[in-house]
Image (tube, rainbow, N blue to C red; front, side):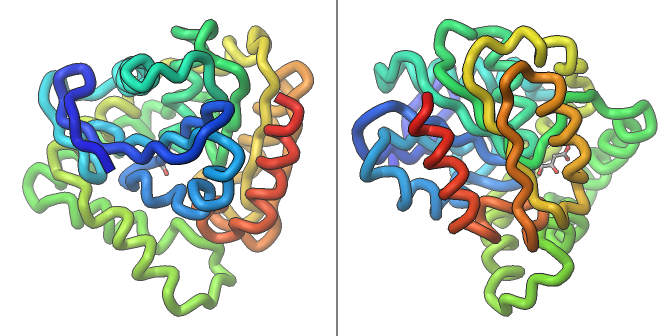
Length: 262
Ligand code: MLT
């Protein structure tokens, strides 16, 4: 673990292994621990880098709020520059997917491949954005637990009976700071539509989703894959929104096969 300034923010990240860099960007309101099974599985073959986005996990937050998806993407780029990675394969889960799509638009020269996990390219509907702003107000008044309580039960497949999983999911959300959660909510509410950029992607793309995702239905992945030239789509059964954590074996197999061709 490191805690150092990236773009003026005290930031934490994981950096393990050597080889082609694989940068894993977590979702909301999670942290890099969501990728633990991927760090373990790929550090023998890749340089695996997983940041805590500013205001989430162990990373601090200073500077602007909302944090736009572009600003998170700039943080990822600054981290890659600091670590001297050169072009990398970027994987983004959910909000992390919004971030890596912003990264692909802004910094295509630093991209070798893209993995879009349980995410979508479209923006929030006006009602969805208004809901996020209302939630941000609640977090301001009552703390980040408002979001944890609302989201934790929706992260897993409804059929998941693993008794340890709910506590693991909550532990991934627990470190999130209220100001970080608010900044992310407001940033997501104002994110632009990334759909027009999909056809222009020039790198290999893997789109992965769980078939039991109730937060971002897998139809979103199907739409994105259809819009990206040459994209590979993998749907994983018995997996909810946290597909990489919930079904690491099929997830890692799909990722490994993809990485072999990048
Ligand atoms: C996430 O897991 O990052 C969130 O569900 C994304 C969102 O709220 O749009």
